[in-house]
Length: 182
Ligand SMILES: Cc1cc2nc3c(=O)[nH]c(=O)nc-3n(C[C@H](O)[C@H](O)[C@H](O)COP(=O)(O)O)c2cc1C
Image 1 (cartoon, rainbow, N blue to C red):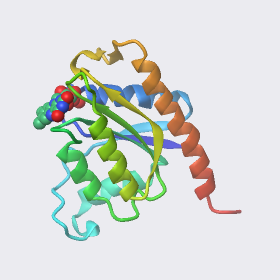
Image 2 (image 1 turned 135 degrees about the horizontal axis):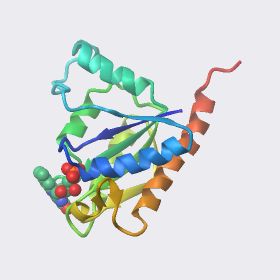
Image 3 (image 1 turned 90 degrees about the vertical axis):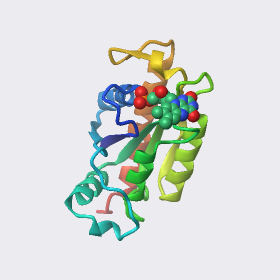
């Protein structure tokens, strides 16, 4: 069971990455191998066939192929998820994310949290044929939500851990269902 996270923030110190790391840590405690997919050096999607971009995109898509479940995280940028994350998703072939399990995390500066970002990510995830967990985590006032990689707000660590655990639980079910019959 491998769970990989994609962070839609490229900031070196990112609250979104802090949130993803806490959820990933819970997935690891649940027995999954975990890691990040780096999207910072991907080229722009320009509409060509996805297998015509070369080794960087090939390696990115291969990493996705090896994941049983993905955690997508993004800051809210002008009411939606970031362009870098959308670009990464646009570089996926039509079947790359089909049947994968996806968990969603989003952060925002405002009190209202990042519900638009989560809803937009859910819509796009559905469009690429993924299964999206009903549970999701929105982190409002994200600038104050983490310190030294730990959640500072009551309940946030629990919410993120529960998401990581659900990814492992339901990811295992999907992986078993997708396994070739013996
Ligand atoms: C271009 C841009 C647009 C943003 N738009 C919003 C927004 O619409 N609503 C909001 O609450 N925060 C907005 N923010 C703030 C970020 O969502 C917030 O700082 C987030 O926690 C940053 O995540 P990071 O630490 O992972 O980079 C925006 C930030 C940037 C740079």
